[in-house]
Image (cartoon, rainbow over all chains, first blue to last red; front, side):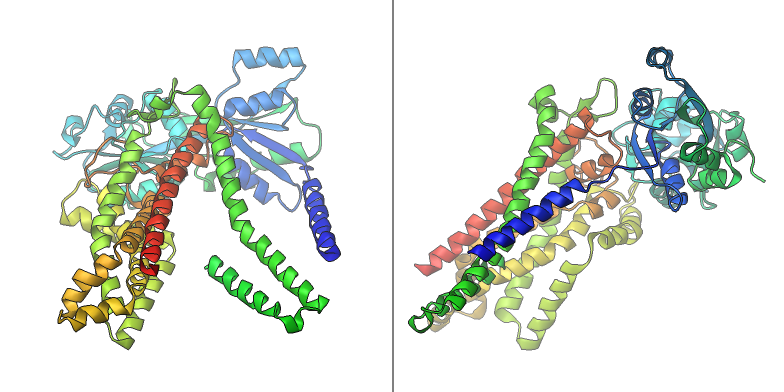
Length: 273
Length: 316
């Protein structure tokens, strides 16, 4: 009996110790936009041997709010700060300093056998809202359109929703793919499909369709002549003092960091050597 | 399995209690420790179940407090729209369609395989079939999904000239193969559990082997067979990865097997990863989880009840 009690006491002590050991000593915390999240995660991994970087999502607003409340070092956001957020910042004595860290361009892709060369933003919206359902309605052959979208919580969907759909819902009969590669997978196999993917996922077996007469390239994404492109930001409280936070920002803006951005499927902020 | 292990141990501990050993404190202590360790280990699954239940219901509760229950059974699922819509009816119907389609294929094959293995097959054939079914059960679901995406979907698309190969049918066929081992092995257990005296009596009065299987063994095992089918149904309903990969995930209200559909499990898996923690959308996904948990628990309980009835009947 005594032995059992000792065993039980030991287990309880172990449990308490385990609970108390939840360490929370990250060097840098980054939170915010889910569109920026993959970049933040890649940066955290690349710098893992120098700093412990804690990364979380939640959306641009969550990130900016956390920065203004002093609960994060870096806020990730896919839109500029709002006037109301600057007002709150002034009240709280926070000076948000914003870095432009990447561009997000979403390419429209179809099967190589599809004769379509160009679509307008309005046509794309009508296709994904279910109002245009046949390729001949946009000057193609007489075949049904299979719209391939991303799940509603992906960052690519967010960009698409913001610029193309303007918050109109994607029709429920669209196929919802689980990743950029999954979209590519369906469009490669399906002569009637249309999909949208991050620029880095346009493989040779896919045909890029220009939008409003502009082709999606790294260049057109950097100078925003391509319509489905937008800048991505990170903000800190004031220009960061020398230390981990400044190192993280400088790494992202370096050629190595920008190459990482490109590998993650985004467009860099400048042409890389 | 766990219950059997426990009983086995319990018996040996009981044997220690024989009068000759009764006075020895060491054996007594060892016996007790046995029981305590086994009790702790076997409670682990009970505790896990309790915790899962508690946390899913706790995370689903805020959704039900803010959104009327009727909303969950409406037809439009647009969780990120302003204002959001949380109609899970397309997903409930999607799960039902895919599961029903899977059962139509897997029940006849599974039961026939079970009858063959339990009643007809001679020694070696029996072993080969049994191990083939066991191997089928051990293939990871992502492999099934990959097979469905790379082979089955393009095949169905070209054979049936469908607009896309990602349909409820593709999911149903994959799920049928996945549910097959569950149905076949449990049905075989049920048939084997029918006392040999039944068969002997039937054959003795001049019935053929086919008549014996069809008129005596199968009816005698019927509740166990039904239990096997229900557990197979639970397997099909709860599968996530393979379905997520092949059904197209369109949250449209349709009962057609040839259109893309979204199941409850795929709906959760698709959106959970990047849903802000603590948002209404997050709690809505947990309410889908609670719904799914209730459905599969209901199935498991009824299956256990049917299987239990079989045992009770033959004991009499």
